[in-house]
Length: 314
Ligand code: UDP
Ligand code: MG
Image (cartoon, rainbow, N blue to C red; front, top):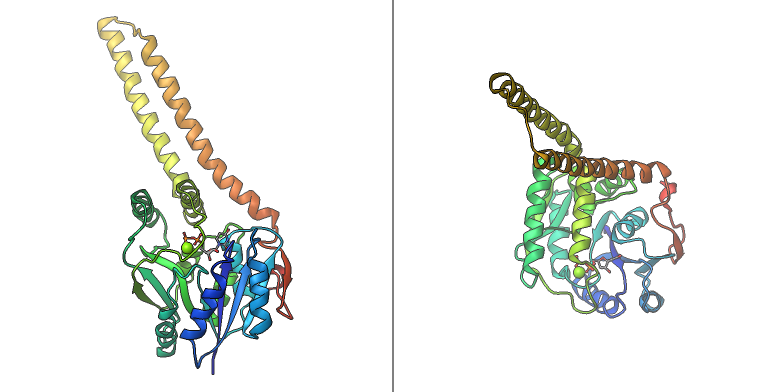
C-alpha cells in the first residue's frame, strides 16, 4: 500500500499537535502514513510535545530547526525529507480539515497528480484581509505568467513526482503558492469552508501579509521593472510637449514662463517618482543578492529521521 508522508510545519503549536495527530489517526484508519512535524524554532513546548508523540507512535517523525526560519523553509525541509509515494501538506492548527484527506488520496488514485484544498468562504476573517487578498490576486495574476487560484491553500496531497518537481525550484526566496502553480500537473480542487484555528494565535499581521505579497510579486514577475521604463517614457513625452508649449508661448506672445510653484512641484514629483522606482529596483537587487549568497534554506538542530536530508543534499 502507498505510503503517505504528511508534512506539518509547526511554530508555537504546543496546544495543537496532539489534537492534530488524534484527528489524523481517526481519519486515516487503514491507511499507511507518517506524519513529519517540522518544529520551526518554536519558543513554547512544541518540541517536547512532538517528541512525546514520536516516542509512543512510530509513524511520527520530526525535524526541529535551530531557530524560526518561517513556514516556507519548513515546507521545503519537509518535502526534501518526505519518502512517501504520496506527500501531503497541512497546517497544525486544524484549519485544514483532515476529513478531506481520504477524498484527496482517492483523487490521486483516480489519476490526478495533485489534490488541493480551496477555501470558499472567508468567514471569520477581518474585512481588510479579504479585501487585501482580493486585490493581491487581481494584481498578481495580471502581471505574472503564473496564475494563482483565489482561495487556494497549501493544504494538498501530491505524488512524489510533483514533490521532486517542486524541489527543483530551490530558490531561497520561496513563495510556495506560486511554485505549486509553476510546476503545473493536473490538480483537483476540493472546496471547503474556512475554519478558525483551534488554539494558539496566527502569526500573520496585515503588515506581514503586505510584505509577503510584495515578495510574491518580486519572485514571480519582472513587470514592475518594465513598468518603470514605460512610466519614464510617458513622463518624458509629457515634459517634451510642455517644453514645446513654453517655447511657442515665448515666441508668439514674448511671455517668459514664471512660476516657482510649477518648478517645485515638478522637481518634487519627479524626485518622489525616482525614489519609488529605485526602491523597486532595490527589491529585485536584494532578491538577487540573497539568492547569490546561496545560504541554506534551513538548519536542522535535531530529528528522528535516520538519513535526514539537508537542502544541499538534493
Ligand atoms: N508556521 C511555521 N512557521 C512560522 C509561522 C507559521 O511553521 O514562522 C506554521 C504554523 O505553525 C501553522 C502554519 O504554519 O501550522 C500556518 O500558520 P498560521 O496558522 O499562523 O497561518 P494562517 O493559518 O493564519 O495562514
Ligand atoms: Mg492557521
